[in-house]
Length: 216
Image (cartoon, rainbow, N blue to C red; front, side, top):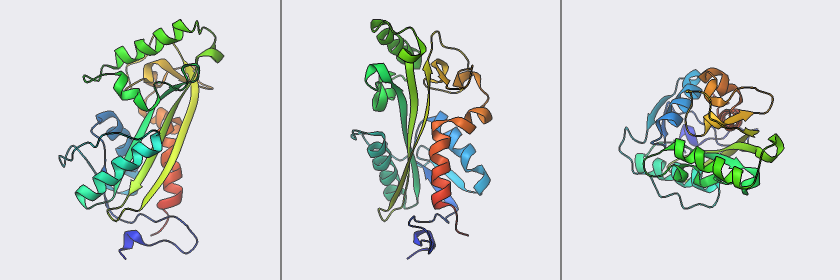
């Protein structure tokens, strides 16, 4: 068993001790955020796009299923541990949509201005005006997979409100229409470091670190 495959005596999780990790994504925004989160651990992160790895079809019915299939595909193709994220924007009154289809709502050209407009149109169709009627959340499933098939998966979430019109030029995706509970600015109005402290991805990543990055 390799060093990376060993478990600590007091942990049910597999401990990551490798120095190279594949970030199984072609989304540059996600890659930047994950690389920022990995910096303190001295890990060399290579993206799937750098290695020309194909993106598997996201056939899962949940964020967890899609994160696991992407991480495992990248790990097996590269022969290295791989980290994959599947995340999206979930609006309560829209039965959780766009959810796992968040990227698909933006179309082949990744037009998130269009996707955000679709969310707002559907909210208007519901006559959703008050904050409680516009409750939304960002959800992230984060999976660390090894080439032998072992996986560790964690899910993070941040709740808030879907607003209109969009505000801010930072971030990516649906960030300009989301205000987290307890804040008065959208994710797109926050600096990267501020968003990192409260985001769904940061929540999932903290769980991953606590479980799998403890061994020396």
